[in-house]
Image (tube, helix red, strand yellow):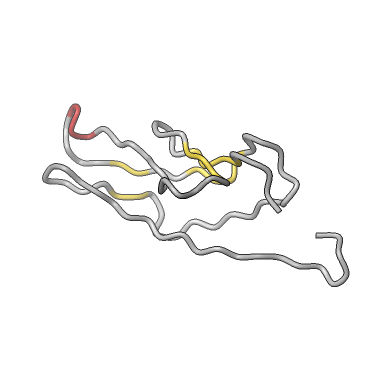
Length: 89
């Protein structure tokens, strides 16, 4: 922010893990941190989350999803890449 005084905002995100079989997915980190400029262009990667599941075959497949009410950011359901979906302010 180039304003006087400079301003910033912080948001905490809570992850809910839903598991439909016997082994719950485990994320590669318990805490993720990211910073993004408010003038970031669309599709700019903010962060990539990663999880593994000890189940086998199709039961080990991980799908990432953000809450429906989030319009500012999107996530690639296969890779966990979180990206800017619309202009930030």
